[in-house]
Figure 1 (tube, rainbow, N blue to C red):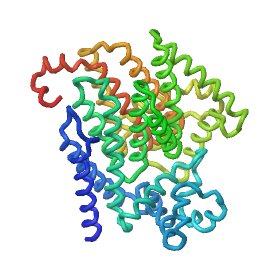
Figure 2 (cartoon, rainbow, N blue to C red; figure 1 turned 90 degrees about the vertical axis):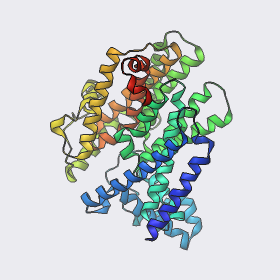
Figure 3 (cartoon, rainbow, N blue to C red; figure 1 turned 180 degrees about the horizontal axis):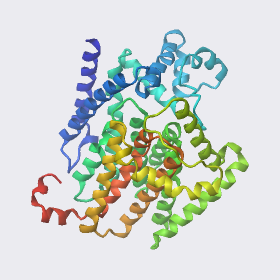
Figure 4 (cartoon, rainbow, N blue to C red; figure 1 turned 60 degrees about the vertical axis):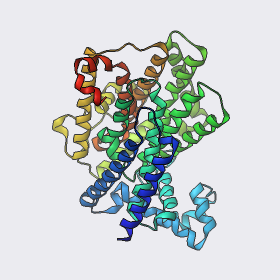
Length: 436
């Protein structure tokens, strides 16, 4: 009962903030839409909790529970040694042996046996939960309320970042960002996705602002977003490196042939990944990808996944290159309908069909985009390509691919929206005027 009352209280508080803050005011989208979306996200988070409760008998294997449970160890330090709590929360745990013996040793997922990442991505979600425990009194559903508000802010920032490039398509952009099934589903749970959306929203919003006006505050916000991405999903930052550099080269040098900026960025990226291992062996790009793949394969060998499948083994740079087409097929086209073994995987298959429908719409209702918008279009597609290749090369589980590819899915759908002539569709189908 107390959990319900406390969750309701915070839900009302956040709804009040959404209704009053200028951040959630938009000239195309009514303010109450954001409140409705927040309510839907809370409902979905409850559904996700019920699904995980039913199908994961062991909380230690359920993503939404295991980091929440570990955060109690960190939070309990506040009662015995408050300074330790704040040091661990802020990452100032420099005397690692001390913190390991007294705290991390008692967590199940601070150091994961099947992690190949240079920087563990479990720390940030454990810290987030330890912070929210200051307000939640340990009630799980309160954490759902907080992560969904963070997720809502991130998605709203993504909407604001791209709406300038999609004039008269704001409602469709809103639907894509907030209501696509996998974005709504996975972005509403007590998972890293909420933090990733927040980081990407801050990054995109202030990157595009920076191209219009140079401010120190913009650099600080971008730096903050980069730090969040480093500690959540570092590979997203890797996938962003070439498109961001190419976009900025084209923008500031005002290149007419946009491909030059992206080729230059690609060359600089290739040089850097070849120089990096000389500085530190752990920075070997190909080795890290191969290691990530092998680690994931070992994990599903010991903890079988219903949606697991076989991917070609990577051994060197050449094997990486020749398997790029397979990686893209695994990420964009698969799972095929006959490969779907769960609700999560069916979700991905249906979304793939939706993307194919969007491509068909473009054939009949294509719109030309101007030069500056083309730069963004290439930015989006190169990021999607990079991200989908990295995921397809390393992830042999459809259920995981569904989640990992969400950031790329958002930008892919935005790119397709840029190519669709909405006015032609409205003219042919007048009933759609009220919806889009």
